[in-house]
Structures are given as structure tokens and as C-alpha cells.
Length: 314
Length: 191
Image 1: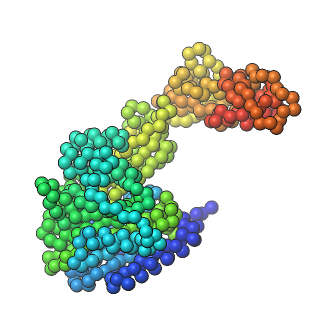
Image 2: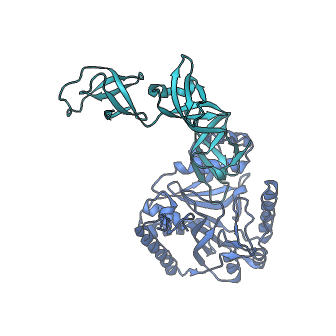
């Protein structure tokens, strides 16, 4: 029999519709403008750990609306959000679907701490759990609390040993961020308290992505945060980098890492750089996985249970 | 030797790990939104039967294992080896040692068909059918008419296995047993 039926129950799909409506109402009440940027673009990402799905005419399906939204911010659009589909090649599993729904928003003149408060408000409001507890934890605390080495100060040998010990990984040739990522997703995340939102803050500089740096003594940290509900990663946010020169430097660094790892070359988005040269206002931004939030609201363990049709049945 | 990349991992795939052939039992893809992807993999060591968990960076690869499951009929034991014969008409015989036979020796019955796992052509494990019919060779005398009280007693079967059976069963009767749980299912149907 051809599997034409939805992977989600109709009950879950009705809850999904309610969630999307509630998110729009949340932003309407705060006078944040909905924008609707293209999912098909002429540029992709340089990020070593993300792969755009390409189209035959040379286009890139977007992995997030970040670059387009930042161009709108540079053009003066003001506070804005986008609720739409994004695409990431080769991501498939209980918590991953190559096409998924992302809610991304930007707040002008805010920093990451203010935006974390709003992420918590949104999650509490749209989940119907106004009392959902919230905790903030630095990346370092998250590691040491779980009995892992200090992620900023431990040397590579110690991190490889921790990955080997906790994950039975053949980690002898892993790089620093490989070890940190593995320990984060497979040791720290599963140990996060189940029924609360946990914000993890102050990431290592090597994992800044598009966040600003900050120094703490002799350690450089990133003003980046992640939101978890239980052990499920929901959102990733930044006190946004606005310096075009620094942005270009990070793009070049990505390209060099791609080269070193034998990954396909990726051109940098010149229109984003031009917009940042023209002037990106100070802002904080965050992207939240809508399907995953719905999984938590409904208590589902597999993303297919909240999607009309998962990638296999689409 | 062929190898498999993590994106080819799926349940049932046979790979080499630390020099031993293994079968993949479960493969979970995990990835932080910004960061490296990993595969958390459960594997069963086909030699020892032990389950291992391993973490791979997505994109890493492992060597494939030259492993084949075939049906074979059990023939006899010679004190050192248990001998099996292929059922494909070739009548080819292969000896399996104690580590390959393992706990399955409790369920070895002549002329019964078993799944034998061959690694580089040699048996490394033997799996019995889920249900097997065996004779009770030793047990306390049956309690007449007691078919409902639900009590049980130990019984030794023709293969040497000991299982719990209902009180009404007698020596010499044939019973059906679940080899996975070692539980009595029913009396065997009369031949």
C-alpha cells in the first residue's frame, strides 16, 4: 500500500495550526512586523556544518532567513519576524527533518539577555504553560555541572579523553569543537532538567557563528545562547555581530576550514556583506524550531509525529 | 575491503569494529543546530553477542564485515565441534565451536534448521528457531486433572535445557518452548 497518509495525527495538525496562529498573535501584540523573505536565494551559507540544498538553476534553498532578514534590517524595516520553512541537506532523524519550520526574529537595540526573556515569554505563552520554570546557565557551568572538563580551559587531550570516556568515540583525531559538540549533545543535553526551559549562554569563541565576542579575563566568549526544553534544543540566538569586516573575516575562516576538510567550496553572500557595510543596526536575533517546540507541547518523541508529511512521505 | 560511511548506516548493516564483525542494531543522528553532526550507534558483536555503543562523527566510515546468515541443519556433536549441513542441496558441512554455538546448545536437535552466521566462511554464531518442540526426559510425576491451578515445576528436556512447565505434564511428553524466553508454550501437537 502506498503510504499516502499523514505522519502526524489530525489532532496534532490542529494543534500545529493553533501554535502558528498564537505565534503570529504574540508578535502582533508587540508590534513586530511579519516579513516573508525568499526560501530560494542566489547565495548560501559558508558554515562548515550546514549544507544548502541546491536547485538545478544554481539556486540555494535557505538554511535560515538570517541573511535576508539582516538585509531588511539594514534597509530600515525595524523589529521583524519570519515564520517559514528552511532546508538543511542530510539532516534526518528523530529530531531532524531536512525541511522544517523556523521562527526567526530580531529586536533592535536589544541584547541577548533581553531577547532570552522574550523567548521564555513566547514559549510559556504558546505552550499554555505560563509557570514553566526558566534557568540560565553558562556553557562552562553546563559542562562542569555534568562532571566534564572546563570547556574553555581544558586542553585538547583532555577533551578527546572525555569524548572517549563518555561516548566510546575513537576521538584521537577529533578537533576541539568536535569534542565540545559531541559532549554537548550527548552528555550535557540529555542531563538537562526535563520540565524547564534552560538557556545556555557564553559559548566558546570558536562557536560564535554570527554573535559578538566578549572577553572574560583572558578567555574570549561569544554572546550566543541556546534554549532547551528538557534535552531538546529549541532555539539559537545572538547579540548580533554588526561589524562587516569581522563578518567577512569569519566567512573567510569558514572557507579555509571547508578547504582543510575537503568540503565543497561555498561563496560568501556579498549582498549581506554590502548591507552590513551600509549599516546593520544594533540588535539581537534568535531562530526557534517550531516543530520541536510542538513536539514538547504534545509530548512527542519523533518529529514526524508533528509534521503533515515527513521527508520520506513528502 | 569495502567500507560504509555513517550516512549509509542502518539496522542490520554488518561492519568491523575493533577487529570483530558486528551488526548495527540502532543508528541515531544527532546534531546541534550550529555544529558537528554525529551518529550514536548501537552494535551487536556477532562473536560475543555483546552490545556496544559507539559515537561517530558523521562522515566517518567503517570497514564492512564479510558476514552471511544462512540456514543450516544440525547433524551431530563430536565432543569438540557441533556439525551443521547446508540446506541448499550442496550437503556441505561446517563445524561450529563452543563459542559460536553459545547458549544455543540448549536447543540443538537433530534435523532441525538453524540460522548460522558465517564470518569469512566460518560459523561465528548459531540462532535457534523462536519455537522448538522437545521431549521432557525428566520431571516430577504429573498431577492428574490439575490443568488450572497455574503452578509449575522444573523439567529437563532432551537437549539438556531445564524449563518451568505446568504441573500436569509427564515424562515422555513433547512440548513447545520459546527459545528466546525459555518459556513453555504448550504441549506439542501429536504427530
